[in-house]
Amino acid sequence: MNTKDVDYKRYGDGVFEKPGTHYNPNESFTPDLIDYSDPFTEVEFPLAYGNSFSDTYANEQSNSFEAYIETGEFTATVDAWGTVILPSGTFENVLRVRYDIEGEYKTVQQSSGSEEVCPSRKRAMPFTRPEFHPPSFAGR
Image (cartoon, rainbow, N blue to C red; front, side):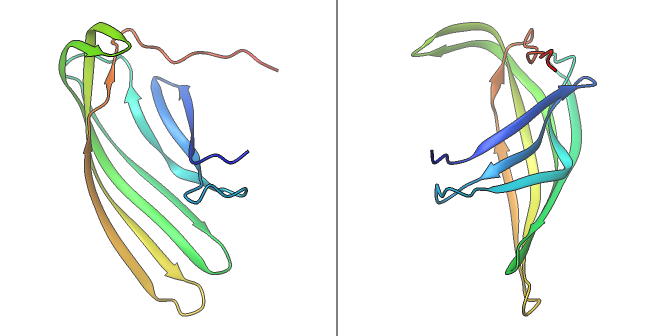
């Protein structure tokens, strides 16, 4: 089975974070595992209108050809609330979390040591419900 990208999520200590992802841009059978040495915190709880938090994230991976380093920082702000109307239904009491993200992607060629640096700046605004709590799993 070919998959594109799969993010891994973790909930604990009042945060919902992304500790890693399988990155598979060409939908090959061998995706790259990106394991964040400093996980990307997506939400801090409790979540309420007006809340704001900041965090950093980082990962580094390499193969015999190149090393890839990603670092960044962001601020998340719960800046709006209301009703969201979608084709699948209407959802009331929804919060918008605005992410302002600045980062850098660096690729280093193993043979020559040459570097390519790509700065990144983006804004994302997903919605969530204030009573949202990630599922808890009890397993062996």
